[in-house]
Length: 496
Image (tube, rainbow, N blue to C red; front, side, top):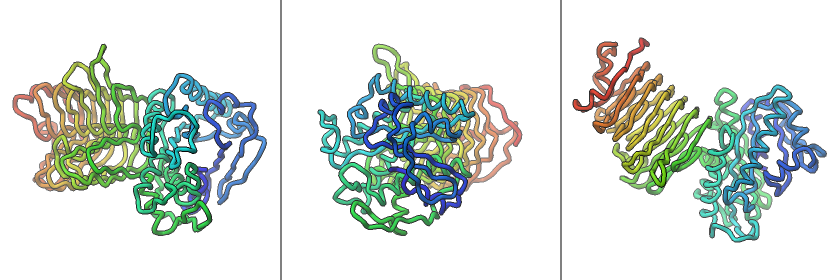
């Protein structure tokens, strides 16, 4: 049970006003949840009332009964990753997921509830023989995780979830640590270890939805531990707990990579109405000159032209993240640097007529980074990227020695543009060679453009400072080639 440690964690965090209900039946799938919504009463109904430090197991409850018992703030749904239906997206699976979502919404509306819905993307198996006995599109744990992650991307782009909680990412991260064991931190080859793995899963749930919905409480100083060393249990100690927490929220790479909270790569697809909250920690990459693109929604957004124009669309998304990111060995500021974008890290087409269209997206929170490129919306708009009606409210402190840092976008290149975008987040850089801008650090091609954009925050750093006024604010874009200046039109200055 992913949530096993949550009562103790909540108690240690001083959050004593939260009620939790967990409906569980081993091996059941989303299609079975959907079809047995009102008829199946064989669940374990685990209840934790406000202030309790353990779960009470009730019997005889259906999903339909629990769904109308009280208005919920958050509802999570998890698929069984050991079954074939989690390894390839089908119309039947989509229908079942959407059917279950609608049942939850209708039931909650009847008791004046309007919860946020989150999809839990669970773990890859250590023992592949424990998974369903059919032909499998993977031969090891890493390949299984890649298949599951691809399915998670489909769920998030085609179903009405507000966000994702990836306990599977947590476990994959934890398996790369020195705490991994011969069972891949499972107790039987597929169920999570009773101790550390489940604690890490609870951390992922807490940091994604509980903390952000309760004043942005974090687990950095949380004292809850699980000391048992019984069979199938790795103890949660003062030494191991921070590693599990880090696994729940951290990204890193050993080469070129794309990483996002929702999708690593968004390839000619649509990501719509996704809302994220939590913490991102990145230690960067262990190699230089190999792009590591990290994003709140996606690391890499790509569009192309096949038999038709295949745009990549990201719209109506909100990111509320506390970001702590390092470049690691990659401290450059070019297209192959380590970078972070509140919505997308790196965007491009292949010099064709397709576009990456990022529309009506908002980035909130704080970014404390040491990166060559970091922006509230897109770090690098390489080819054919259009940002429209997007807002950055996140502040940024960037200690890179020589970077290109803009609060909306760092690099705006071929056929890329900003339309009616606004920055409200303060920006401070400390490197005296860093290009620092409230909107765009570098306009890199004569075909890029800006229209109707506002910058209403403070920009500063290790530079000579001048007051910004309506008469001179265009001087502080960052860097604009003289021949490109005519592309910037209809910009206004709002008094702070």
